[in-house]
Length: 247
Image 1 (tube, rainbow, N blue to C red):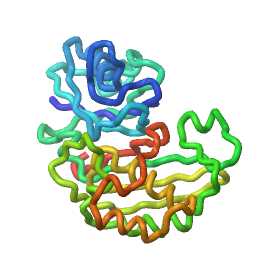
Image 2: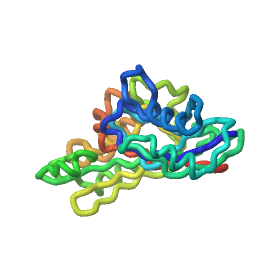
Image 3: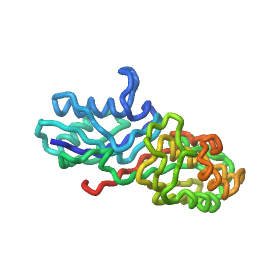
Image 4: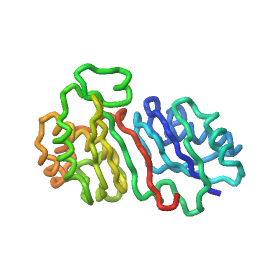
């Protein structure tokens, strides 16, 4: 049988999602250990989208296969009992055999958090980017409109990206401000490696008045990564959820 779960984690003390060397702490590693304890056999999980070191998640979706029958609450609460404090399962569901956490996903959503104030607040900026220069959120929103729709996002593609195509479709990018905090919300069919962080880094240049709104379109059209801004730090990025037609 195949089982899907939602996973939330604070990425600060993880070297990303994917398993690496035995002494490297990753989210996949601790999740598989927890589920293996409940299943009483080794469990291998597959996720909806691998996250880098320092990136957080509110609802990463995973699936695994097992012949062991357990009630959903046993997988949920038993799994959580075996997880460290910076990871937890949020829900569990039995799914069809044709479900795949990655390949069945039709869209993914990320948030990026920015703390925009002259004085840094260590509690907030531990999990969001601190920017001391006042940002023009209206200009950033206008610039982001050039990225909406189906485009070649080579200019925002990380050098280690293994995706076969740079063509992706962004459904929306929204920037909203509440007091000194700015939230960028973005949804697309899929994302390239470092794509969201590269977009945020580029929009920050516009927000600080260092580049024009039209500069974003020029970068997109030129398809050259070196012409875009450096990637925003990973600790402000959150994987929010994956979308499915059969879950």
